[in-house]
Amino acid sequence: MTTVEMKGMIDLVNIEAERLGAFLSGLDEEGWSHDSACEGWKVEDVVGHLSSGAESWANNITRAVAGDADSPPGQGFLASGERGSDVISQAAISTRKEMGPNLLEGFTTRQDRLRQVLSSLRPEDWDKPCYHRRGKMPMQDYVSIRVQELAVHGWDIRSSRDKSAELWEESLPVLVGKVPRWRRTAFRAGLELPTPIRFRFDVSGPVPVREDVLVTGDGFRVEACGDNQPDVTFRCNTGNYILLIFGRLDLEVASDAGRLVIEGARDRAAHHTTWFQGF
Image (cartoon, rainbow, N blue to C red):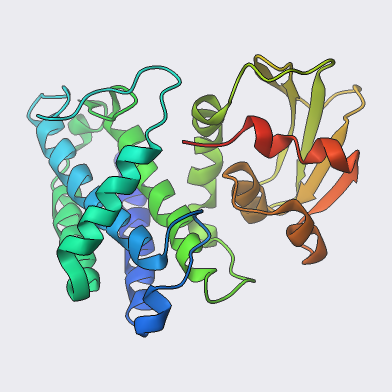
């Protein structure tokens, strides 16, 4: 990754955080207690999660620059297939309770520290290994996950007030690049499936995607669209593709709202979220 690309990634983290902070500053007390689009979490819980995440990103990046990519004290790496949602949820609620009425200030302060840490990175730091609960990864990949966190969870929050909310366009190329990783961690193997199901994604833009996902029950593979007839085709723009992949769209609601066109067997379309549930 070039210096220009590194700066662009860091800028995306800062832009997503600034826009979210501006939105949060306009919420009244009731708005903070609304259910978010992240199942089981209120808006204030999501902000708690993003606040604790900013602290973790700053600490782990600082350690990585110094050559330490091992797990921090009291933490560890998740085993393959292990869900991290319970621990994440507990941390989010704990942060929300700790900050109380100062939750927005806490989010801003921690994100500002992360901004300072990111601004200090040098090009030679970008490939250094960094701790993540799912395994060590290059710094550039770790920072891109923060873009994903802010973008998707920011939508979770904004959509609590505006059901027509969209993902911000600037981050879409990064989010499309995170889809393979998300699918690997989200896939739930072992469900019975008499015959494979082929899901086709026909994404118009602004970042076009055309791909088939063939689910065999205990596994899946991604293929270029070819002559094989899909069981289900999803047609949408890039933002709604990301929301679908990340489990944020109810298929019927999204179809009725014009976010998504579903062609083929509707009962099989619903299976997509059965296999790709997220962590």
